[in-house]
Length: 212
Image 1 (cartoon, one colour):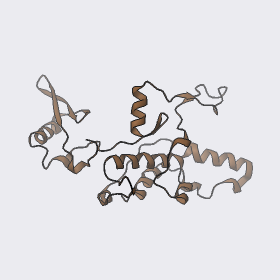
Image 2 (cartoon, one colour; image 1 turned 90 degrees about the vertical axis):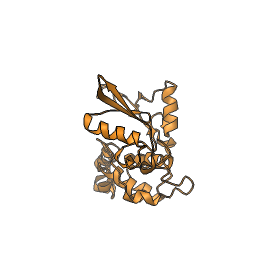
Image 3 (cartoon, one colour; image 1 turned 90 degrees about the horizontal axis):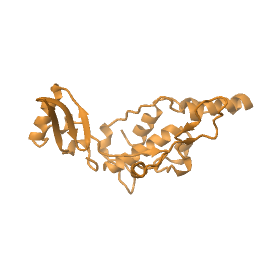
Image 4 (cartoon, helix red, strand yellow; image 1 turned 60 degrees about the vertical axis):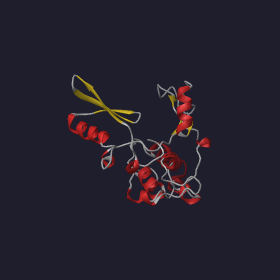
């Protein structure tokens, strides 16, 4: 349930059966395939109004998004409902070298920066900046960051961040540094490159900014 954090959440839990076999479970608006082991536990949680059981349930408490369809979860959802597509031809891809020249680019001009100071922003990779912005929006939505002051709740101190990424900052930082190196030599390599493109920097940035 949006707007409340996990330990206080009381989502509607519904177990679906087929031929007397539990096959899926609904938590709020989400549907999860599930085996016998956890089904009984979750059904007991529903029966007992989830008292003492909520800590065992994973739920979505806040939403955030940075996408090729715009900034913000609401903007993304409205664009999808309107049938819009963020996939376009990339002008910087050479069709004589790359067969597919379409992709969903994020317009940097429309990406806000609400959470990083100027110095941190300069030394933070593009992919990590987007992750921090989207995570911050989700935490505001969940009531874990003050909407006005942007200060995190003390409850986040025991939290953590897990980010799935395959490219990290290689495309945005490392390849640009390589081109600069070919033109200017060692002087063309940014001094902070070694802390710009690692895969775990998005998770680290979120944890560092929001006091996890």
